[in-house]
Structures are given as structure tokens and as C-alpha cells.
Length: 125
Image 1 (cartoon, rainbow, N blue to C red):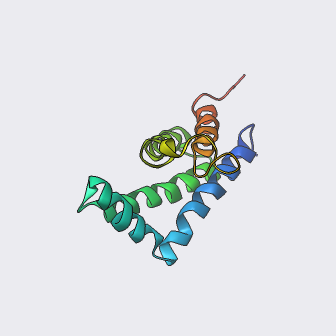
Image 2: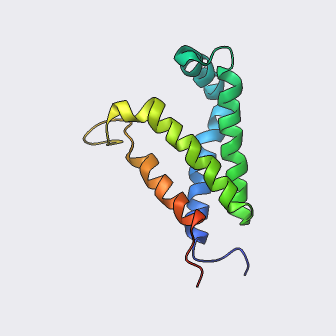
Image 3: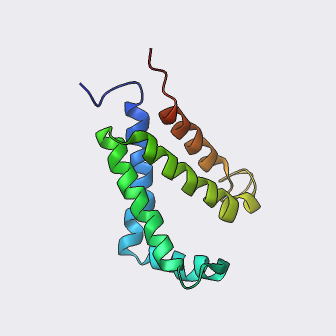
């Protein structure tokens, strides 16, 4: 089975995470709110909403790539860049912990980046 390899479970898990981080925002105005209320206020005005949509569309496209096992490396690179910007702009100031010792910290993004790095450098023996 071509799509099932040593990264199959991780690819499906990352795809689900990306889809669940994107699709609800399409229907509950979350993407527009992120663009207007956060990105525009952070200095990206008037491009906050288009940038927010580009981020969420990249999540959906990359999730599809992970699910069909195609264009994995470009999808991983795009997602890593988005996650790094999320760390810089949102999560770093909140500290390490997502829950427990803090709120909204970098630990989840850090783990996702590590998983995505395994997609970039798979152990193909």
C-alpha cells in the first residue's frame, strides 16, 4: 500500500489537527476575526484578512497533501513556517505550556514542528 509507510499515522494526525484548526473558522467567522482583530491590529492592515485566509487555506491544502502522501516536503515546509510565525507572534509571549503551567504557549507548535521535520528527513533505509 503506497500511502501507508512509517509516517502514515503521523501524517493522518497532523492532517486532522490542521483541518480542525481551519475548517471551523470558515463557518464561524473565526478566520475573518483573526484577520481583522489580530493581524490587522498587529500591523498587517489592510492585508490581515487575506493573510488569515491564506494561512487557513494552506492548512487545508497541506492536510490534503499529508493524507494523499504527495508533496509532503513542500507541505511540511509551509506548515513549519506558519507554526514558527505563530510562535513568534502569538505563543512565545505566553511561555512554554499550552495548559497546566500556562496558557497558549509554544509546546504544541514545537511538537508539530518536530513531527514535520521527520516528514522532511524520513529514515528511508
